[in-house]
Image (cartoon, rainbow, N blue to C red):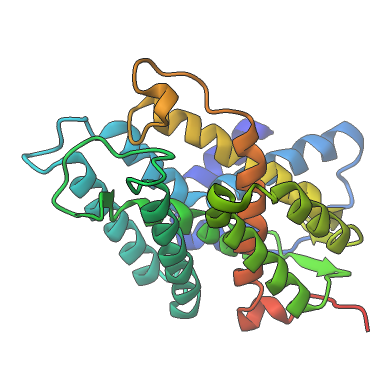
Length: 292
């Protein structure tokens, strides 16, 4: 059954695949292990589809040689690829212009953070290769790595027909998001208050649940768990990126080593910040329940 489902899905165009994944058809005959297997399969397919931008972009990251492509430096080639992917997603209506605005905002926020972190005074990591499209020592494609997180959340929201219950008041979410972002800068000067901010986020979202539909039945999970899981997979992608030398931490300049597991918490907090930006889109905000 699984092989038949996969062969059918892979034969579809993106728009037709989305229509199939979004289509609702009750399947009362699915029970027990068979239901679990089919739901898990569709969950994986929807996750992969939601990662379309990130998957294509990071495929380019791994495939473009360090020496560049057709005379174009690697960092510049990656910017061209990222712009082409984003343009194609808008042209094919996989993303809307309103969604693009939110993604662009996160692109700018991420790029500003990159400029600060790679500055001479901080030097948290570096981009050692040449590129014509480097600004303040940071290649412009780097913002797309942050934008990919926003794109994933937007796509997953639609594909899984997501709803959030017991979301905290929006202004509180904005305050936490600002504190998270500010701490990324200020911990170099006044100490790291990340765990205090994380504790506040934990209390704020403790009752929040995300409702999602892998197939025909709605499932539920804590929203905090979703933040942590997404952060984990970003941490894995970061390990792959540093392994291929896209950027390097100071301890990786001599030889590659695994990115410190503490970065997982940073990425999870960044996901909270991204989520706060995304939920202010009109069609998403309408599916957020805030207790009176």
